[in-house]
Length: 151
Image (cartoon, rainbow, N blue to C red; front, side, top):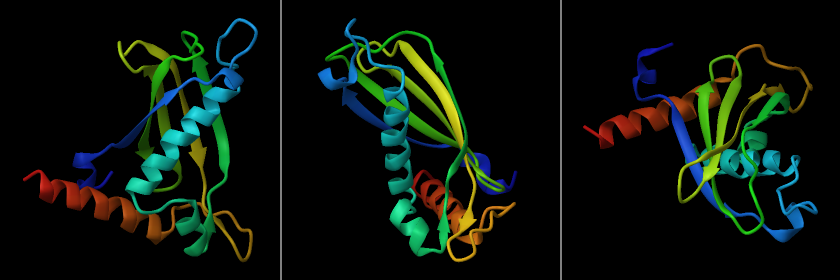
């Protein structure tokens, strides 16, 4: 890890209300929707970095998910307000994000997980074994700006 990672990790949160169409007959959020909640937090985090999916593609890379894990602790229920948080935990060779979904009021942990994304060049379809300079610039620029704002 480099010296810029002293302000690491980078996180973003979104609050969501579990809609009726996300629940099963027991009014519990269907297990597949938690990945959608992760995605909402991941998009908020990428927006914070000014490197969202459109910006990724414009920079010549797409970032498919190659690994995903979800651990269900407690169910989210119909109409419940939840908070989904995404946190970048690795970025030099791949983009790894950890997720936490909790009850927005109590903070009770509901679901955790992580995803791993790798850079793929748009033109050639070749996977990169190290993150391209654009991602490093975005993250290190964000960290530097936050360090300056907090000093």
